[in-house]
Amino acid sequence: MHLACVLGTRPEAIKLAPVIRAARAAGHRCDILSTGQHREMLRQALDGWGLEPALDLALMRPGQGLSALAAGVLGGLEPWLEQHRPDWVLVQGDTTSAMAGALASFHARLPLAHVEAGLRSGDLDAPFPEEANRSLIARLARLHFAPTAAARAHLRREGVADEAIRVTGNTGVDALLAVAAERPLPPVPLDGARRLVLATAHRRESQDGGLDRLAAALARLAARPGVQLVVALHRNPAAAHPLRRALAGVPGAALLPPLAHRDFVALLCRAALVVTDSGGVQEEAAALGIPVLVAREETDRPGGPAEVVGLDGARLLAAAERVLDAPPAPLRPCLAHGDGRAAGRILRALEAALPRRAARAAGA
Ligand code: UD1
Ligand code: UDP
Image 1 (cartoon, rainbow, N blue to C red):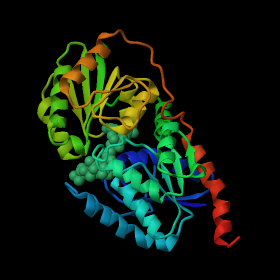
Image 2 (cartoon, rainbow, N blue to C red; image 1 turned 180 degrees about the vertical axis):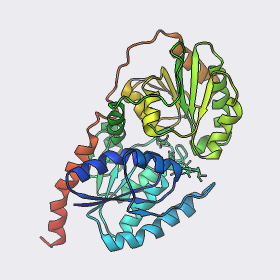
Image 3 (cartoon, rainbow, N blue to C red; image 1 turned 135 degrees about the vertical axis):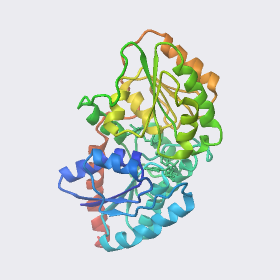
Image 4 (tube, rainbow, N blue to C red; image 1 turned 90 degrees about the horizontal axis):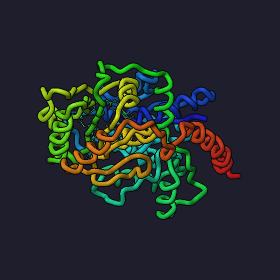
């Protein structure tokens, strides 16, 4: 079987890596087609798994617009897809790379499979543009790998045939558990006497003021005795600046550049509390049983120990204090988003669907 995985950002690389690894271990050809939507952060994520793209469109530009990016993916993928004609094109999640990769696959009349299918917030404006991207991909995919039963229910409601959906768990949990099993050491010294709060933030819809409110609340949290705040910044200046502005020089706060996944997981495993607007980080914290405050107005990933606090500083602080004032509790890992075996399920489903496709192509 010949698979082609289209990916462009850090989370896509992390979440497709277990599938790529499983496919190659089973003797299948699995090519990585990088749009290069991200540059350094994608390289970091691919390096963590020893992965090299077969094609790199190197599209990233400072302050990139969504339409120019999508156009670059469409035009860039077409020649490769037409020349190599893989048995399946795989996309993951809801980025512009995934959406445009799905459309390029459709234009080339190649069957598309969607990993992490069926997440919905119900609000086209949040997350923006991801809510639209994942719905568009669902219209084009032949196989939908839903992480949860709730995601399957969303797809069914939109008319996707039951036979085309598999509930697999989230491949991000596969990646997390594989990395955590190696017991990575933290990339910065941690003060055992203080409780670690780990934060990330990057969402586009929060970049007009929301991140400033979040950053101000984090600064107040860092000032509490007994707290060590570590912020893993995004490489996007529009996401990093508000955090730098509010937190640079604040005692008790450390601002780190985007971390290699194993370094991030090392911190995650030691965190008393996670504050994030990242979908992937929310899933990872939940999988480990670490309390997580979701700095968004909604979550498309319900389940587990997550509390949605939005970008209202007072609400976030109150929730954080509730967690930090309680005595440390034993972690209760949660299987809401997956059990670490999603990649194997995805691979078996792709293999099983192949003979039917081949027979159809032969006119049987
Ligand atoms: C994108 C995805 C979002 C995903 C996030 C993961 C879309 C529409 N958005 O966010 O779903 O959650 O990635 O992180 O697909 N930059 C660098 N180096 C990098 C990466 C980014 O310098 O390695 C800078 C560039 O200036 C770039 C900017 O960050 O223009 C924004 O990158 P982009 O991929 O457009 O970010 P988002 O759309 O916010
Ligand atoms: N991550 C990482 N380094 C960091 C911060 C996050 O490797 O400094 C990982 C994190 O563990 C998760 C993924 O990146 O697997 C989430 O990516 P991101 O927050 O960029 O995107 P989202 O999940 O919101 O789409």
